Image (cartoon, rainbow over all chains, first blue to last red; front, side, top):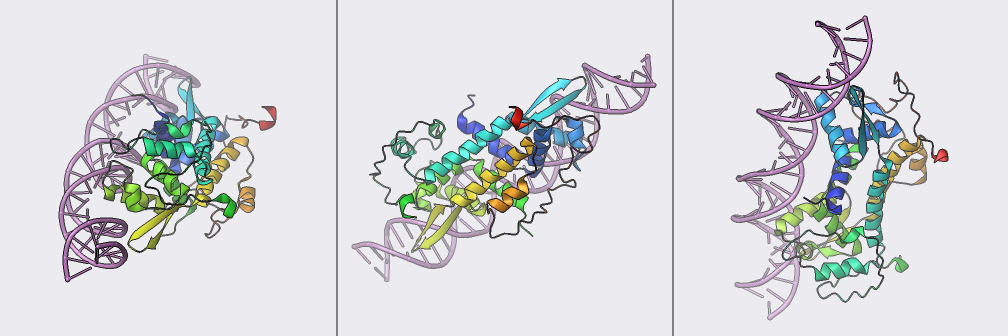
Length: 146
Length: 146
DNA sequence: CCAACCTACAACCAACGGGTTGTAGGTTGT
DNA sequence: ACAACCTACAACCCGTTGGTTGTAGGTTGG
C-alpha cells in the first residue's frame, strides 16, 4: 500500500473537511494540547475527539508526543502549507500553460484506470504548450485577454 | 437552513478530498467541458461523473451553463482562492496573530455572502481557548525568531 | 495501595458517500 | 419524424465515517 501523493491529498482535504477537526487544528496550531484537554472543548465523547485527532494525525496535520500519561498534540504548519501548495497548483492550471498535464491526460489511458495521476505533484515546468489535442475543442482561458 | 461559513468550508474541502473531483476541477479550470466530455476521461459511469460534478458545483468550485443539449462546466478560480484563504487563516493562528479580520477586510472572499467579522466558530466555544489553559503557557511559535 | 486520570482500542450503530443501473425528458442532425 | 445524444434524477448497493459505549492498561498523586 504505497502512499502516493494523491492519497496524501485525499487525507489532507478529508481531514480539513470537518469543522470540529478544523477547530481542533486551530487549537493545536496555537499550542500543545493533551487529547483530553481538547475533548473538553466539545460536546462530544472523549473517544469521538480522539478519533478526530487520529484523522488529523493520519493526514500529518498534527503530531502527538507522549509525556507521562498524556498525549500532547501540536499542529504541523508545514503540512498545512503543502495543502496550500496543492491549491496553488490547481490555480496554476487555471492560469493555463501547464502543457505537461494536458500531455499526460492525452497519453495516459483513462480507458483502463481513472486515477493514477502522480502528475501534478512534481513542479517540473516544461512549458511547451501545444494544445492540438484531438478531442478537446475547448479553449483554455487566455489570461492575456481577461 | 442558513449556509454558514463553516458549511461552505465543509463543502469546499470535502469537494477537494476526492482525486477524481480534483482531476475534474483541473479540466474545468483549464477550459469549459461538457459533462459527457468530462465523463469520457474516467472509467466510470456517466452518472458517477455527474455526481462528482454536482459536488463540485455545490461547493461553488464549478459553474454550469446550459448551451443546447449540453451543460458546459467551467471552474471558478475565486472560490478556489477562498479555500486558500481559509488555510492561510489557519496558518495565521499558528503565527499567533489574530489577523483573520484583517484578512477578511483585505481580500474580499465570499463577497456575495454574509461574512461578518463575528464569525462564531462552532460547537460551543469560540477559539479563545488559550487564555484559560491552566498549565500551558506555551507561546505559539514566534515567526520573528525562526 | 488505591483512586483518579489519561489514553488506546474494539464493537456497534445510523448516516453519508461513491458507485451502479434505470428511466425520462430535452436537443440535434439527417 | 426519428434516432442518437446529453442531461437530470431516482433507487439501490455497500463500504466508510462520525458518533456512541465499554473495556483495559499505563501514570500520577495521596
